[in-house]
Amino acid sequence: AQTVTQSQPEMSVQEAETVTLSCTYDTSENNYYLFWYKQPPSRQMILVIRQEAYKQQNATENRFSVNFQKAAKSFSLKISDSQLGDTAMYFCAFMKRDSGYALNFGKGTSLLVTP
Amino acid sequence: DGGITQSPKYLFRKEGQNVTLSCEQNLNHDAMYWYRQDPGQGLRLIYYSQIVNDFQKGDIAEGYSVSREKKESFPLTVTSAQKNPTAFYLCASSENYEQYFGPGTRLTVT
Image 1 (tube, one colour):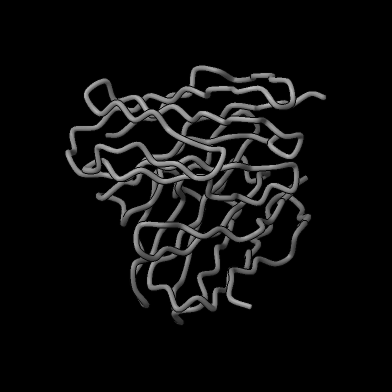
Image 2: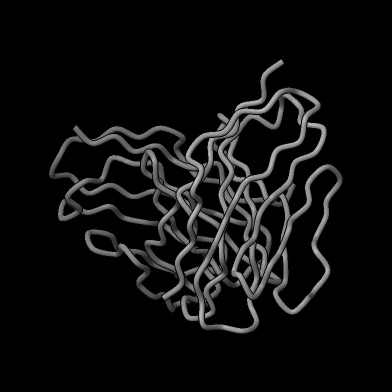
């Protein structure tokens, strides 16, 4: 079974600074997908970034980038130039082949961006 | 506009009653999913369906039932057998290894 661990329940960062959210996972699969989702107070789940395990290059989306370390089973999210609108819960997720490609989520990190 | 709709946004029921949560998508996706979210927890998989007229139990299916009679619809029934039904429920559909989520339904059972 795959597990996803987010070890930081809460984090805080000042506007314009950089913050890194941690995620580790456990799997015996070789090809898989990893995701970071953002859940603002509206509770809508928003895809932030996606990483395919067979790609060595780390994914980037504007101010968001990941540090994917396959051997260490680590998938951290870096947010650069943090903005007040980045305040949200962030969930790391692993796509499960054996459950119809459903997502297995970590417990989340609550990020607060302060002025 | 293409997307996933869930209704209603808030739902209140008395203990012992079954309740059905609606999920509709017009994205033409084959796969659909139901997740439950509790405070301090990530989302947990209840049921999923990869094709019409077929569905599978997820990690926490006890006390829930689903149907998939149409491609665009995947309703979830929370039965009286579910011990702690109060939660936030999210529906999703999937294509090309990406999931798209609805806005969710907050169910409160008293």
